[in-house]
Amino acid sequence: MNALEEGTEIRLDFKKLGSIADKGLDVVPVVLQHARTGDVLFIGYANELALRETLERGQAVLWSTSRNELWHKGATSGDVLDLVEVRLNCEQNSLLYRVIPRRGGVCHTKDADGQARPRCYYRRIARSGDVLEFV
Image 1 (cartoon, rainbow, N blue to C red):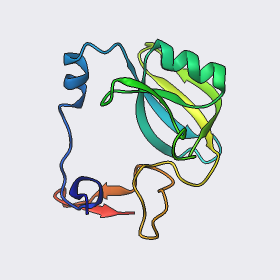
Image 2 (cartoon, rainbow, N blue to C red):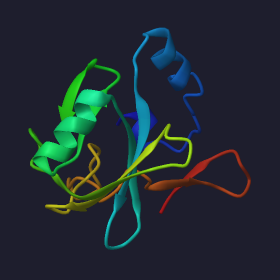
Image 3 (spheres, rainbow, N blue to C red):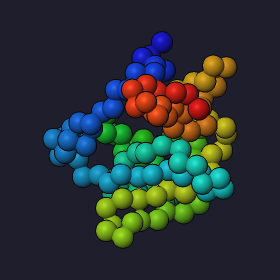
Image 4 (tube, one colour):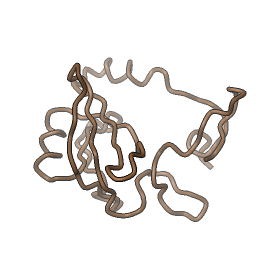
């Protein structure tokens, strides 16, 4: 079991944005939202190339900050996200990709049945604030 992705211990990565800045990556955060349900599926990052590819393909394309490469969501898993629209916030420093998942899975993690989860937000912090609960 991967304790980070499947555990109930809170291990937030508060250094993520600092590590992106330290690498000198020119990216903005991207919220990926299911266009029909409004569910937030996950958060990614885009640079100019990823945004251009997203608009040209009509599918979610991001910049992988861990691999430092273009990431066409679903290219290997089949969990493609078809683009409905791209929105940007008032300060033009983040994007919202409104998408429709082509299949049921979105997250790279698997549920108890071995299927890709439909969103990456599958746990919540318990009211006590010291443990995670699956939802």
